[in-house]
Image: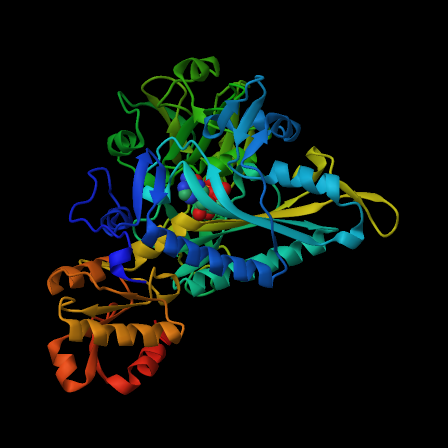
Length: 571
Ligand code: ATP
Ligand code: MG
């Protein structure tokens, strides 16, 4: 392709709202344009990269037996009512009505549609296993659309759904997808980790998130350097922290005027923070009060709290009234003396503490010398792992101190079991003549988020640095002066030769100053630039700039295509 026929507007400035470097660079390099908050158009360069990522995804899905289909974006509310998710999905779902007043959703995900499709199509175990996938726009009315394509309201997702006869089959499908995802992100040239994840609202068995490592990422990951354990901070299971045995002192109430935070209490009573017990009061959808207790230096993990309380789906901060109704007051809560209106969840490590401090369920008073295993009423509390992981916590597998890092979730895989097949009554006839529900899995990749993550991980002050596999063009040939016919002819010759060798090459035949063209090349981030100048014409050599290493190489004209092909293999 020729640059004179390519719409690739480069800009000096980025939009004021752009915080992330990927957002700024995608805008400046002419990849995307905003239509509304979280809704974008892709310009030719951006769409070229998107298509390359989608092609890699397709190849790896197909290699595992995935079959590409296309399902409707507009989905009838009835199916979502059947699964029960119409009511619980909340404001993130884009809803609309047709002229007859029938309700629809713009698909945020496709479990309902695909399950109903299979329910109507597949009758026998002989037709299984099946893996259907599609690549299309998804819609989520995110509370805070931001960071460009990273968190948008309309975005391209690959979603695959697996249908198996039994759990073993489902687990094989899961392994296949785990493997395919690893290959996809490797081929995209990304540094990533597959981490154990919570399967959240989607329910079901196990899950992994594929996370591209980047300081700007919204996900926090705990990992072990010794045994390869890695989990999202929400998921990371924790071991009980045992405390050294101590002589137990009798429980005592003391006055603590205005000490309504852990910081204030610890200073007032002059105790280490590890000796304090912190309370966080939540309310769930049924307006039940749920009070979580963790050590003062720990943080409550809401997902773990939800998972430990039967029937809890969402948590909100509890108001004063609920707390008062449970015989307590905010800032001074304790499991000792809360009435039956409170569901009490205590972190497992709290139960190991002795001579600690909690509130006394009355204003300006705390208990000291609290020893939970002696002082808490075991019948009224649930003990569970409910805290967030912290750097240095022992690895749940090998005990080594854990490290923390940040990343961008680009894909997630789940086993769903029978959750949707039961809800939508999707069955098949098994070999033994019995009717069974399908065992399902679902597997998503954000295509635009993957493009953005690649830029987050690969950029410098001059612009983007693409891996060859997903670069909008692999090589750009730049005659420094396109008005000079000898230079242009020489550049065209190289361009034609490269194109004939199968290289995805651009000829920058614009009659711009060399400096402008070079800046554009660096900003857009083509892996290799071939420069044609009076010097190269005289010497019979061509000059190559490697974008990533900033190296300049000189190759003889005759061997340059071969050398470029070799070089591309390494990029
Ligand atoms: P997040 O936790 O970041 O909101 P999610 O866990 O809700 O994402 P999934 O339902 O697992 O997302 O969707 C599969 C993939 O789709 C994600 O891994 C991500 O790459 C992509 N994705 C999800 N939401 C968005 C969004 N708002 N904008 C762009 N990509 C998204
Ligand atoms: Mg996810």
